[in-house]
Amino acid sequence: MTRYIFVTGGVVSSLGKGIISASIGKLLQARGYSITIQKFDPYINIDPGTLNPYEHGECYVTVDGMETDLDLGHYERFTGIRTTHANSVTTGKIYKAVIEKERHGDYLGKTIQVVPHITDEIKRRIMHNDTVDFVISEIGGTIGDIESAPFLEAIRQLKWELGNRAVCVHLTYVPYLKAADELKTKPTQHSVKEMQGAGIQPDVLVLRTEKHLSDSIRQKVASFCNVDLECVVQSEDLNSIYEVPVNMQRQGLDAALLRKFGIPVGETPMMEDWNRFLELQRTATKEVHVGLVGKYDLQDAYKSIRESLILAGIYNHVKVKIDFFNSENITKENVPEKLSQVAGVIICPGFGQRGIEGKIIAAEYARTNNLPAFGICLGMQMMVIEFARNILGYNDANSSEMDSNTPHNVIDMMEEQKTVTNMGGTMRLGAYSCDISPNSRVSDIYGTLHISERHRHRYEFNNRYKEEYEKNGMMCVGTNPESGLVEIVEIPSHRWFIGTQFHPEYSSNVLHPHPLFMDFVKNVIA
Ligand code: GLN
Image (tube, rainbow, N blue to C red):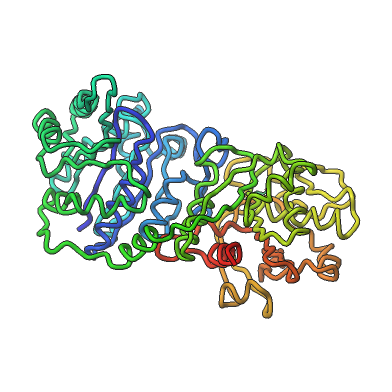
């Protein structure tokens, strides 16, 4: 029998609903339950693929090629589950499905309305997976937003229909007013009232706070909000997001949830592997600086890359400090001063012309100074262009994305992309297999010759130049077996110079850090 947990947020955004949802998933898994976590985003875009990273942070990609919210990255990193298109739903998708059904004549004679048609479609998607013990549905946005209303109505109906098979966890914020030296619970009370106004009584409250909350504050929230005291937990700022599950477990969040569902609680699981990881994290204090060369100066824009580096650092017993370098400001003159501060560099993914010359200069600096360098997607393409310009002697080498008339299009658009006119969801997306050349560095790193990794791009290494590259020392060591497309390049004579057309950062998780990031960090500190 599948049970449903809804995670909503009030007062302000950025409370970390994704982390709490992922932590709940982790704690239930530790008790032997199967779970899935899905994100419902109230915006009208079909997916965040067309959203500017400044607006929405990183676009995460699932194995089956769905461009999704970055919270799915947290779900995968915390729980090791593989998300799919079904784990990411937007208002745009809901409306599209309903309108398509209407055009198809499925509702013949009926007036199509938010209630019941939109809410039914939301409910259908919440209930879609009945093969797991728990479905955790995180509702994006903040309670009270106009956009959230249909989602709240769907939750209200489900809570009514499912009885104790549905539980609502509501996150709020308890601000500390410095002048008064007081923690204030009023915003939480208002937020719960807003939920009650929509007909939903939250079962569990998670209070985000920068200062520890006393039992009397929790007691006050419990009695003003009609929530059991054991169901009011606090989520204080911690040194690392990966401490959140054990912090929640210590306060009995998982036990409280099980009691709400009427499930016997049993013993608290030890979570040995997770705690072993946390111990490694606590003891990895030696700092190592890695440069991130990209154009979005925003923490969330390269979320999975940052987390993959941090995780690989912990397993290599170091604390990776990430220094961001805006590629638009990198010049031939200042690159030595900038990159001499770091022990390795990641050349980031991206789209469009802005900032690419800085990435090319960074790649050249890393190549000529034996600085470990990892190019991801556009980053790999820039490594390839730099090599063509400075080693193969094609000064005008470029990607046809940046210069459609370049005579040396070492990166070129795939044939099947040339007729595509729609921007949304039309790239080479999701997992593709890749064969690795024996005797390459990456074959040692992966320990296998057959891998599968996730993609998100339109342009490719141009195979017409393959031989020339290999003759001159940049080897194409990973290839797609069906299409022959080049997926990995490396320079064997360099300390560590690898570029991947795919995104390994999407499949690195807490208990299984990605081998490429592991080996990169290992060589950065060597
Ligand atoms: N803009 C490049 C392409 O479409 C790279 C995309 C990326 O870095 N994700 O091929």
